[in-house]
Length: 253
Ligand SMILES: NC(=O)c1ccc[n+]([C@@H]2O[C@H](COP(=O)([O-])OP(=O)(O)OC[C@H]3O[C@@H](n4cnc5c(N)ncnc54)[C@H](OP(=O)(O)O)[C@@H]3O)[C@@H](O)[C@H]2O)c1
Image (tube, rainbow, N blue to C red; front, side, top):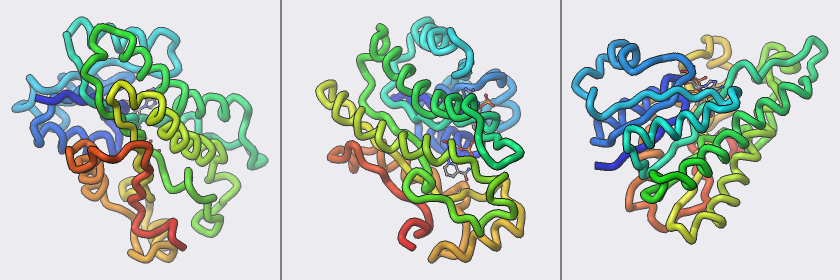
């Protein structure tokens, strides 16, 4: 049975991925800053998967957190086949009154999207449970490919943080760097860039969004899971360093 780590498994997309991969027969380890296993199982009625799920604490802004997370894997003798770097922080996406972003938030967003995932990979690969790792997926965004569209927002300057797109672009390049550097270990590294996913957006935002994609809508949460399934499958065995765009066509216009 294959084992997969999903960072940010409690979030909008992470939860869908977790449910899908459990149902597909994976052992899944999710990270969370605060939710424990019992809470996650009871909130999502996952009692039948109790033996296939672990929830370990991870907070990229706490210094020893990555070490503790990996020590948890070692203690439980969990050797991951795959990692999905999916976590993101809404806290680091704040914008100042004048529409600019603070140095602190720029650096924190980079730590969250790049430094944390990089260090987590290394920490796993340098440990006794790193030998089985063969597949890494980085969850990026259309905003890592194209610039933001001001007319999508009611208040562009206050609602579209520059640090998000910069970091998402860096994640796509991190994917390529790691694909090169980890190929000798037989590890494939790919990114997925999603368009906007329904869940938090209000009706007015969805209406504006619909004008910018050929499919005329945001993605629904079900549409985010199968592309991950594909990259994990043997069908993608020839792919590494790729950025799979799942965006209803947003980036072709
Ligand atoms: N939603 C979209 O429309 C969309 C579109 C394109 C791309 N994406 C990308 O898809 C991924 C998931 O997005 P989402 O909307 O599902 O995110 P989300 O709902 O905000 O969830 C983020 C997850 O990250 C975890 N997290 C937050 N702060 C953390 C920290 N300091 N250290 C470690 N983990 C932390 C949270 O876990 P806890 O709170 O349990 O700690 C949570 O599970 C992100 O990379 C995002 O950029 C999303």
